[in-house]
Length: 147
Image (cartoon, rainbow, N blue to C red; front, side):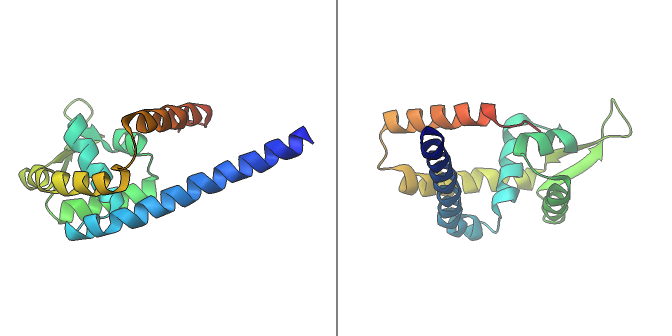
């Protein structure tokens, strides 16, 4: 009976995580659309803004993207003039991605919109609830296989 209860609890947890993630992304779509971005594009821009120039592999690792998906995201960001790709000076075989001036401007313009959308979603949660949720999700993430 204990195993059966644990199985039901695990299944309930999976459904709660999946449904929360799907609803969160739906709630964020209007903010992304207003800036002409997708969630993966924002993830890449925000990561490059915070971490500075990165190799494609490092960006893939930090954003938890797949190579196929990230290739499309980067291609579109380059075409939009938000990111540039150059040869790594220390390893001529590698490529480095960095924000352009327009990319930095896009991040600066979108960040307040993004933060406002997050405030609407999470505004009713207490600081303690947010910290506990982050702690629990971090514990779960550490138990998952790392790329």
